[in-house]
Length: 299
Ligand code: A3P
Image 1: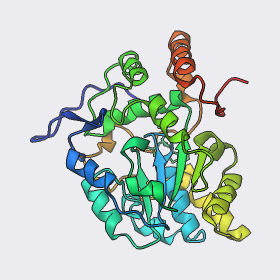
Image 2 (image 1 turned 60 degrees about the vertical axis):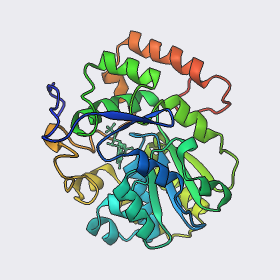
Image 3 (image 1 turned 45 degrees about the vertical axis):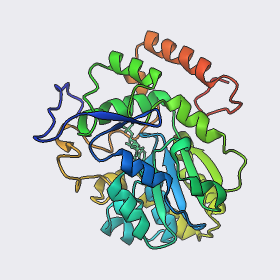
């Protein structure tokens, strides 16, 4: 899957056009200004649970965990319904329609930056779970993803893509702005932030904390079942979670899997020491004054 490949030509009738909405770049395939406006106006219920991330930070992993918690660890829902129906993506028109009609309590996924999120959320009791990941790993994961996700432009070389990522010149905008924006909700009762790295280090403990936030009590056996069924191996085998049912014009899995490596620190296999230092400099500048320590921050 990691063999070098050439640019992906758009399928007939599709273009790789991007558009801007609220200062953020979106691909023209799957997304539209109308859809984003409708997402902003989305009617939120107090029992909604939103799975929010900057892309490639563990969205589908968290979605699997939340799906399993909802079913007390019983994997039948996860094994019979594709993840994009269990926790539809709010910012696509199709996802929005699915979210509107989903049985309550609804699970809804989103990569939207906080300023484009449904306005109604901010005066509701609905819950947001925000998953963050080491941005160097996000960069590497996004680089590979951009080669298989047809709405995205081919990322070119990693060197070029690194610059675009650091400048926020990528779909869904800057990682730094996204994280800073959502971190502004820290301290709210209905906001829970967790990192991909914490999920990696202690999945069971993370699930327990999520259950407390969600007001769910799971037995030890149910917790074990959540952990077992949300593992990288179990999800890679599950056709409802590994995107093998996704149409080719959206995702070209011939060029690599969606569930690619599922590890922390893969950036070390991709970035040169110079690229890593450049990243660190921009990171320090852009995250200055935030007052939050992440697992990847130096002590
Ligand atoms: P890699 O490309 O580094 O492998 P998102 O769902 O936000 O698009 O994020 C995708 C990333 O999460 C991919 O990272 C994918 O492999 C990883 N991932 C998904 N499920 C996982 C799991 N159960 N355990 C570990 N990583 C997982």
